[in-house]
Length: 406
Image (cartoon, rainbow, N blue to C red; front, top):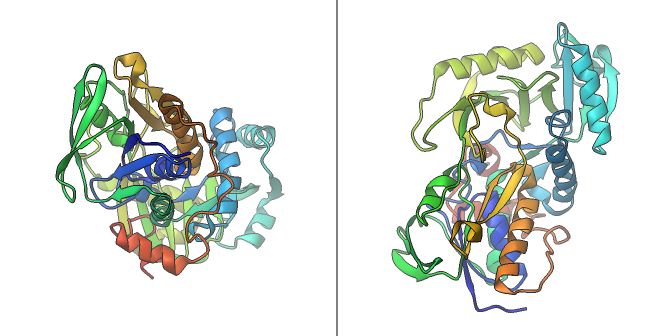
């Protein structure tokens, strides 16, 4: 069904590009803007895990179910945007065995395929593991290449009529009569454009974007460091089986292993301290699971900011904030044609986009079903073409730069 309304999507990470793709497939006229290259915010500055949901299973079953469902969907539609490495949760000597049992039970309760085995079997399968590993639990984790995923979604959106502008910051919004009327775009566009509906998919910057329309979206951003070392023999994603803490995940990225991460509250997702202790602690803690990373050369390091949504005061421990997502209808706040999508995980971006598109289409009177779970992403089976698209949309981001650039 065609539609004459123009929807402006602000934010070119996986969620924003996913929203643009979903709406375009439903026949909606969409324009997406991103201030830098696609995926240059949180999406391309993560550790790149395709989460199974195992990390959240025992304390946030809703988020865990979302993850495992979308994990399976992405395995079927995303092709060269992901790598099916598998994952392990490992219990080390001194770790709480009851926590391991709760983890295993919770994973099974959300419908996850798991297998438990002892430390010797774990080391036989993954020789890089520490002698202190007492037992392990398999989960269907994987690796995401977010630069490719953003580019594939954006290209799919454009193939169905959308317009995508990278290097185009949103500089202001005109609100009149309880509606966003115009958006001031800088950079590559440098113009005022009319808006029929606006989707705020700006991630950690969602609060600043909402404020341009006089709206309040309370974000609780937290920074985390990722440290890439030369290491090509980890195999699966390795997680420490304990309450989430610093340095509890090792992620294989072909010739590298990415170690992470910390969680430190920040006030401004743009300007924040980057402390050396975060690098040192991440290496030290990850080496308890995979000792060889302690002496592996560090080749890259970067920080990302989690786009945590906290409708109430979050407190200092932002690891305890739900990794679920919310789609906010700002009609209840006095702006009838504005929607924000906040929180969530890279793994659940497609579901986030679907729920957002459902709300937008309801407001526009568009009757069309979501098709994104069943349609293979644009060029998903052609990694070389994907990397050409990444370059066209602004280049590779820190998470997957070595893979995409190669």
